Length: 622
Image (cartoon, rainbow, N blue to C red; front, top):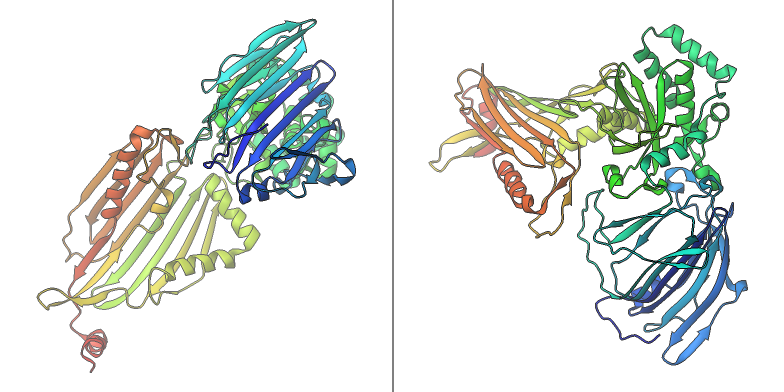
């Protein structure tokens, strides 16, 4: 039990011992943890013993609770000192899973103490039946002196293990009528994981253990839970008939069915016990007018069945995305379910939980999850899940209208949003109001240009079928041109313009060396234009600058035609990650583009009228 202090880590695990016995009807998971608290912060953050469990099918058995201080051992296991709280670990996501938390605040815990406790959680989710799945982790961010994972099954169980990130295969042995899989390691070093990891990165060595032989088997197992046979109630058939009468094409009907659920059913998950895996009947979801992703998918597929449109539930992972393919077949690989609808030989990946969306079937934002698992009696297993993208999700344009005899400049700002970005803007307007959006735009531009003032209200144009929203703001900059002398004492007026908001869309790549890939946002497709209306007395040279990188393309095109200067900046991501060997080149390209992003015009100062008189007063104090 004794351990040398480890000054590099506030917490040092001495023992991490997990053992699980599972069969067709039950699951018994035992755990023992013993760790040394090396700092006051470690004491503050680890002085409460917490065990989470689902009361629908689990119970907790406490075995030991000790504090070791030198040669002194204090036993603290007194059930009357424990409290039970409703944890609701997913409440912030509008999911109520019924999780309870058994909690005990350990008294008189000091730096240097060892906290040692063990417990068991007994029970198996009835939705899983005889199946089993678990991810076993073999290394952590802190060192572990002794690490053991042990899984025990009936000998006739077919268990598949998938090692990840260099994990060792388990030791397998037969004990009587049981098969035992074990991993035992001593003095496990801490593993440092660099920040900004891609969602599909597997940071720590581990093993997926599953009773499923294939992804197809996982998809087939859950198919009965989503079977809509017999779910088409009179009310559901009535809604389907209304949709049929209102729309001629199957594409329009599919879009209308999705829109009905997005509009009429609010997202709220009650996932107690088996409810975490089994959806409620479609009519019940319709009656309640709320449900989680599973419930909403069942209602959509029931409507589509009544409309004779082929559709199936599709399990996906919103974080790992395509990385689920690396994990080996397991139901634990997913955290979300959407609809995969087939129409005219094409698959549409539709998410009822997105809320109301803009766009017809071809222009609405579909799910972009990399990989997904079809739930069906004849499931093909994992399929590619990629969404169509527009040329650009965001198109910003600042148009500066100048006059040769005035310093005031008119600024027309146009912001166009497509697909998912258009949905975000509409959600913003609906939740906070148009006035808040207008105020935020005004404050942004007032921070860039002194004295800027609006000349009219913010215009909002919504293009329903195209999945597009356009915001137009009209401003006046009273002193748009800046007057100053050059090195020879000659007076000029200057106007500097930049691609406002462009670099906010780009990844921030620092110079810190990395050994692993870095995550970047994807897909991102942004175009920012800066246009200055001058006159035909100006002569400006065109320029083009483009950089193609494995993870993104970025470019700048400058044109001058018919007295109008146009600078167009574009950024298009290609992947959600940058490999370490490509980071330096990407950083250099973005830095070089930033250096040439600002453009300064120098013109003659007007010689007549009130502008010249005001200028003399300003410069000469007249």
